[in-house]
Length: 136
Image 1 (tube, one colour):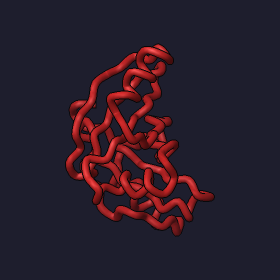
Image 2 (spheres, one colour):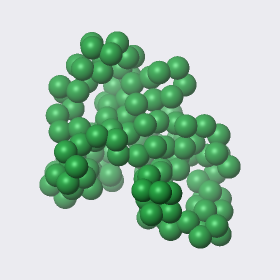
Image 3 (cartoon, rainbow, N blue to C red):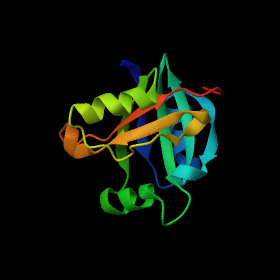
Image 4 (tube, rainbow, N blue to C red):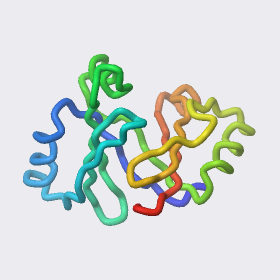
């Protein structure tokens, strides 16, 4: 079911400032940014070997990331795990009594198909399950 850790997502208030910090201070390979309208965020990706760091900036006050930043000030938001078949993964998780926030896949960055499990199912950790898209 799970192939690997795909990315670590971090909610940020100012994406432009954080891109400089991650690229120039940490020296990470910056892969670019994109708007993910369905998730109401702008994302920036950095590569560390075969794992990515994804910075998330809300694109409006109704973004779930806006609420997260308001409540926690930003920081670690979720861990993403790559799967071969997102629909099958959702089904297996539900069979194991995992509370899913998404019962159907949604569109993520790079045309990926994603679904989130409720943090209550995993000791307070928000997990994203991701099936790579054509552009990944």
